[in-house]
Amino acid sequence: MGLFKPAWQSDNKEKALRAFNKLSEKKALMALNILTDQSILIDIVKSGITNYYVRMEAVKKLTDQALLADVVKYVSDSNLKGVKYDLLKEAIEKLIDQALLADVAKINDLGFHKKGFEQIGGFRVQTINEEWYVSEEAVKKLTDQALLVDVAKNAKHMNVRKMAAEKL
Image 1 (cartoon, rainbow, N blue to C red):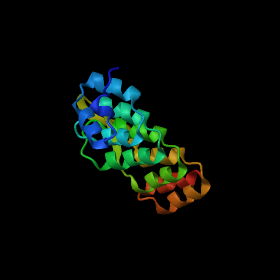
Image 2: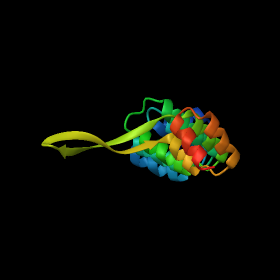
Image 3: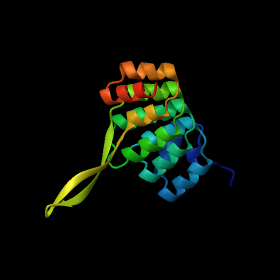
Image 4: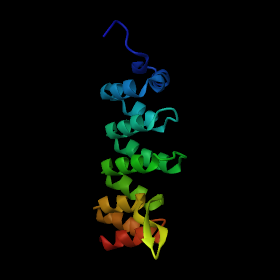
C-alpha cells in the first residue's frame, strides 16, 4: 500500500462512509474484509446507498450484540424491499444476548410469508409454504426463565406470549 490510506479508512467516520458508498460492489466487499469498526459496519447496514451483498456482509461482520439488536429494530421499521428477510434472519441468528432477544420478542411483529402455488381442482392457487416471524425466532433462542416470564406476560402478540409460556 502507498503512503496514503484510502478515504474509506479515514478516521472521520462520515468521510469514510461517503467514500465507502462510492466503491464498486467488488471493492466494497474487499474493503469489508479489512473493516472492523462496528459503528461503521452498522452505518453501512443502514445506508440507503450500499447494495444488498455489501449490507449482508456488514451484518455478518457485526459482533456487538446491541448493534445486532439495532439492525433488527432498524430493518423492521425501514422500507427496504427484498432485503429485510435476509438481513433480519442473519441478525437474529447472531443475536445471543438474552435481554436483547427478550426485547425483540416483546416488540417486533414483523413476519414473512414464503409463497408458492398449488394445483387444486384444476386451478392454480397461491399458498403460504412457510411463515417466519422475528419475535418467534427470538423466543426460540431465549433460555433465561425470568425473561421468558416477562415475554409471556408482556409480548405484543398472543402467539409470542403463548410460545414463551410453553418454554417455561
